Image (cartoon, rainbow, N blue to C red):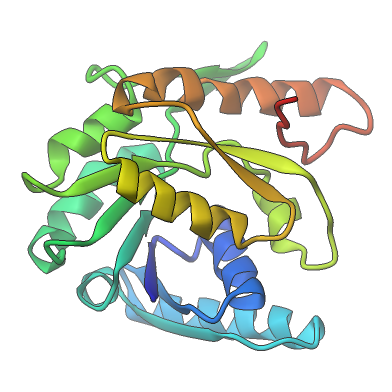
Length: 222
């Protein structure tokens, strides 16, 4: 399977790229607006894999080319770039492709980080408005600590909350999530539940910053 990480040069893109390359035999396509940046990122990710004495298939492309080759497209971009990124690749999306959004809208002040949804109600709703009609959209990977996830020596027991209106697509993304050792996928219903999931991310960041020894924490539901 081919997985495109659009904006895959950022923190969550790096984390998912190296973990999937390490734990699976899927082909990972790192996308960027600048293909040279994508190729530079691939060099770094391959060095991470080499240091862990493992290999994987990672390639770098412009976002449009990565989308054109992919079965699953992860929008690993900040919330404020989401709609523009979708617009740029919309005509490259295969009819059966699954688009995944882990993006969260946040703002920061002296008190900490706060959920900052767009007028659509959630970043996922913004994505749903932007993708072509009929495109399958799933939300996942919002609450994972990217730095720890990218460290192939790190271990963890984390849940990722998965939501969407297509049960088959949710199941496929859940299997992909659980291909990463230590990650469990938990189904939390349809796209309408996006805001509740997205709002957890700033909460976790605040907890990590205010409590010693809780840096790079995730969530586990028991």
